[in-house]
Image (cartoon, rainbow, N blue to C red; front, side, top):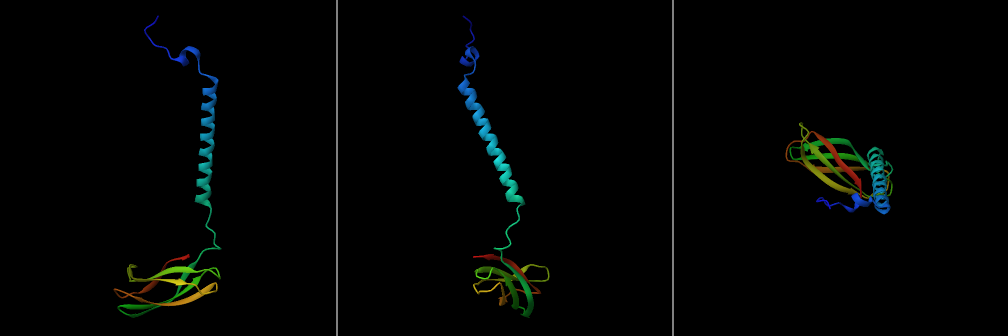
Amino acid sequence: MTDQPQSIEARYGRSKRAQRDRNLVIGVGGLLGIALVIWIFVVAFTPPSTNSQASGQINSFTANSNISSIVSVVISKPASATVVCQVSAANEAGSSVGSKQFQVATRGANVSVNLQITTTQPATQGVVDFCHLK
């Protein structure tokens, strides 16, 4: 007898079932890996649908005083959708000095909204921060 213990695999070889299980695991793992890569490419490179998007554009901006501004915004949205938007008044440096969030539930694709925004400093421009469907 030898002093080195022998494993069952070394003595008799690998069983066919163990080899089949190993190949199955490698195959399934490979398929899942390929599916993940395809999903990442689809998500990363597919543009968002423009049909369900809402957007806003500043139509006019008026600074009433050092603490107040009036902003006219045109909201583009699907005709029957409700939209939540946020508009900010910004100073010369582009920093927000006041903002207002509002909801538009009016029927129609293009809706004009006039907002009075209270500001902490004199504002020089209006900015649409976001508009999204509710």
